[in-house]
Length: 432
Ligand code: C2O
Ligand code: CU
Image (cartoon, rainbow, N blue to C red; front, side, top):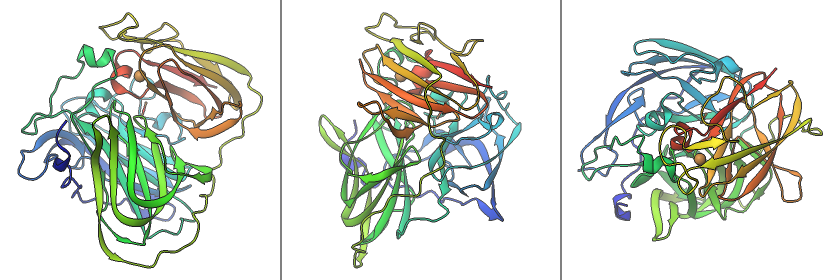
């Protein structure tokens, strides 16, 4: 891993256009295209990436809760692509999953996405075609659904975490599909950073920090400095009671929202065995009197309340290194099956509640993501706990989830360690 001081100057300077707002609607264009951008500190060479609208990450797209977002997507890559709106409970044909909800958008072609964003919170968009490679090359960006009544903060800051595998000169290694990576924890980078939408705050200010793990495979244990605050949302969904900022761990695709008062230079670090690794920081300019008020819960989103489960299912993860599988696109499996099949893993009638045991029978952690829905992780007492769209299940662990399948369509269910997904850890469910 590169030295920590490499990171200090790593704050994003990308200009972030906002979607233009009309009455109850936002419109924007996203153009997928090759991008050359300096990822390493100034003085280092640029990296050839794939991005949106000339930058990595892509522009921060914002839409108001309950408003319609229209995105004209254009593919100027040499290969097919499609855009997935991670965590948004949207109509199935807009989900951006080639092979399940649409064809890949061919080079030179366009696709119009449009949907109402039902839930306020922190989401993101990313390529869902050859995603272990296209996302690793940069095809991702923040998607923010603004609260109807925003919390009282001075700044709303997005930190998109990414993990790159680079040569010393900044060249992105193109060893995608490396079997060793795929059969283990996934393709880890050697250079991680946070792309921050803003780099300056004042002592005493209250900020909302929206942290998105956009890495393909890396789990980030986060250590935050210079902030006194609370966790207010997970995967976009407000937690009923804001909680302590300790032990924040983000699996790929997971998000955490924090509201906190600035008490010193803000540091966003990843805990590693070698110590803390700086992902990004916010410099101080000036000082204001802190509010002195407590941090209140965000208004909840309207997610259906689970009823007694009509089905109880088990999704057992197996395979991988030390699980007997080392190569091919069937390294990993769910219930013994690898890859997308003609039949769904399960079928639900619209509105039914199901309980699914996520059984990790492997030697690695997995972040299991369900499209089109949020589900409750069950607490050890068996009560519906946090609402999530991606659940991190440690090696050997079992986690039960409870989901109201109220969104009709064909939805992917897969590991969001995208190398694992590419190596078989994916399936789909049907809601009719
Ligand atoms: Cu973030 Cu299947 O997606
Ligand atoms: Cu996995």
